[in-house]
Image 1 (cartoon, rainbow, N blue to C red):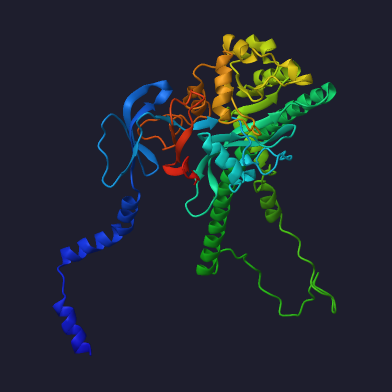
Image 2: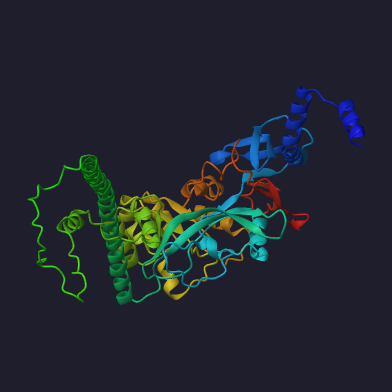
Length: 490
């Protein structure tokens, strides 16, 4: 049998270069297979709305591997690509809701700065999420529940469909903003107490940082002193060992010269009496002194995750979204922004028009989250002027529009932007919920516009999306088909 195997091995012997080539092919097989299976999609001859409203008539968009790989006219289609006829249709970036609540499992109190709304997002709330996709929405910002004070982190979700299940949505940014409510539905006294409590908490966080910094510096100094002390102790031990070694080498060294002994027996003085034990040893003075000289470790200041998150806001790494509707809440938000130099964004700002200049001077953006779409408001809601957004914008305030969740109006994010544009609060409504929204969320280099290298969050409309008669034809999120009008949501 062994002879047969040896003969067979000799018969199929392969040169070394061929073996290396075969190994490379085997290693690349999985990657090559993945690239081949990622079939490119080409939308042909459509009206393409690229970044900031620039339009390409009869343009093409190529999607592959989750990205937009080409945009222009008469682009070369990749091998085996799927082509979609876009004649008479419009291609835009996916719509972005800068303040929504779709998919949130609860609006209960989170009330911890280091907890993200992404943890409360339900990827299996398919009815809500499919409804959003059918409107052309591909990404949304989720606030951290509804609680007073500092109560969590808002996150950004992209509505990417899962490959193996019905789940929809992937977290794009877990820590998009720190959420703060200054008592939007509280009594005047409660609002005052809330403001004082938040102010004291921010000061406590700053004190925590000072204490923590001092502790870390002291700890570093302690470690250096400990190393020096160890070297010094080791040096002393070496000298003692050397002295002992010399004594052993020279028997006369280190011994006191003694007088000749008297041959008569002598009584030992100070010795232990019969039946008594040895005298207890007293600690050596040198050991006690060494113990006193040893460096002392500083008291630890434990790290707090919630305070560390708030520090990111105090260092202007993330903005602070403040829900504030009345003038007193808005003034309190402005005071916090001035005192602590934080990047405040006002959400709601129902009476913002009364303080428009002050908001503009503080360079604070506003997200309109509760637009009166049908004129049915009563009571407290009447405080908002129909021209609120326009007055804010005229004063120089950057105004954005969010759905605030719970709206059943078709295509609400774009519809709200159209309504805001009609009232003069924003400019181009389509740009408001695409490129402007992406920039507002700090994601302008990934989503919000049709350009090469951006994520393939793309919507194909039956016509001009600003026309109320136009509907969503197909939605791609991350290059995957998330919705098709003929088939429904995927």
